Length: 243
Image (cartoon, rainbow, N blue to C red):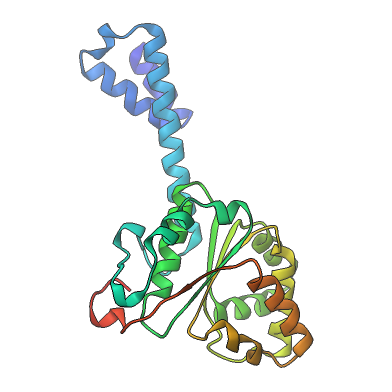
């Protein structure tokens, strides 16, 4: 009967229960557990297994640039990175409140790594995350528009609780990309959180846009409710392979 039960668990994809019940049968625990205790253990094992597989699926789908961990973020004095601020951000309230985070600093100071670490941590909290380098995001949506998939892709972005746009501002934003970014920011305003990294200080972002009205509308939505982190110091690439 136990063998049949294990087979049924496999067929029903109850992987957590299967592992837990196999462990019970292989040990002497089964005789010591009441039926209620055994049932509780099996359900707990299945729940944990499903949560872990969900987290793994979220991490895979996020396509983060780095497999970054908050525990590995450096807080050297020269970086002027506030550990208390990062710890509070890790709690995820800014995601729940649909607030933005802007990370700026010169090349190599660890902007992308920090953004990916926060994204990785959000996945572990069960949050769906999307990651794009800014130029590739615009290219991706341009191709989607040509192939008739634009609305589908924009809807997917809109429904992603945390959207990370990396390397924003490396090149000017033309009228077409400006309207696309405006649509993204309008869809997400007070609905979804964003992390944006840029080598340029926020004060210089206005100059990226060819249309002043579009620039005003986008920056108003991106900046006014945003947390900010400005990273300083020499390139982390010179110090460690953790960037």
